[in-house]
Length: 372
Ligand SMILES: Cc1cc2nc3c(=O)[nH]c(=O)nc-3n(C[C@H](O)[C@H](O)[C@H](O)COP(=O)(O)OP(=O)(O)OC[C@H]3O[C@@H](n4cnc5c(N)ncnc54)[C@H](O)[C@@H]3O)c2cc1C
Image 1 (tube, rainbow, N blue to C red):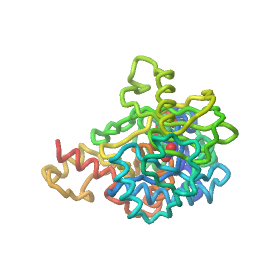
Image 2 (cartoon, rainbow, N blue to C red):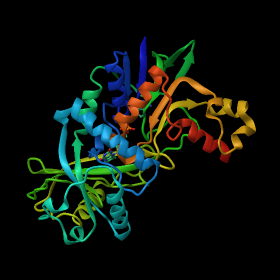
Image 3 (cartoon, helix red, strand yellow):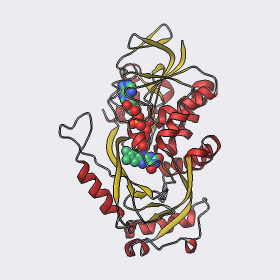
């Protein structure tokens, strides 16, 4: 009997596997393909904060950024490349945001006069910039390292049944707790309030003579170069979905878009594309992640009725699936958020520590139920 079954071996599932195996729990980790075969395998995996004026998402990402930099450095230092980040505004509106951000942030910023601007385009030089010390994590290797003590099972999970205190998975496996971390792919539990949008992304590794010591973010993200290779990502394609779109993804178009966007920021010499990575990232309606115990919508509607139409419904009165949880919707910040969210969810499952309403599935249910 396993303590925990995790369905989906992306950065969310693997961060959870790491938390629980560190606590000596028996963990099963399912994936249809392999570790980091979805969005996580495609990520540039830049660990960076969110440069916006205010808001809950910015606060959450910035807390996660501080936590995750320390976490990767402590647990997987050999997979973390530390490099200064240079964030360059895309337009005048973002310039204003960055100016504001620089005045209010508590993070330690780098002196811009120390940045080597040799390879930057005139467009990039004329925009507002901000720099701080960040890192890039090796996406696939870190997922593999995090999940090494869990039992990996290559299997597409289709059916979950709760029987006598135990979750039965496709009539084949059993566990006391189940956590769903399937990203933007088809959901296993069909609950109407879980509305996750999949956004397709493309990243390329290129060989180039141009040297770049920084993580640069403007229209796309450009990694520091290592042995003449750097990564450029990512595009945001809301029209393509690997499980729904009939036509194949147009790689040539995606590559051209990435190079065109990168060339607005940095001068790249003698470019040769050596590898493509693609995958889906998932986002909720307001981009806040969904972390915690899943609400049973039919039962809650029956039990709470009109009490669900009020502004501040009492989440404690909702009916929840026993020992069934979700961690999803990390958008473009999966590698920043996952370690922090995995800590929060594991403490909830092990010690019943409360999860903030701002990320709990109950918030998403309450919004959906009120609008019904
Ligand atoms: C091109 C690109 C660049 C990105 N760059 C960054 C970046 O620089 N920094 C950053 O922090 N984030 C970045 N992201 C975002 C980040 O990759 C995602 O937020 C993160 O990968 C989401 O992880 P996940 O575990 O939720 O989902 P996924 O990695 O998609 O994992 C879900 C897994 O579930 C499996 N699965 C689905 N259904 C089932 C089933 N029924 N049974 C078994 N297995 C199933 C899938 O095979 C998949 O492996 C980028 C994303 C893309 C696409």
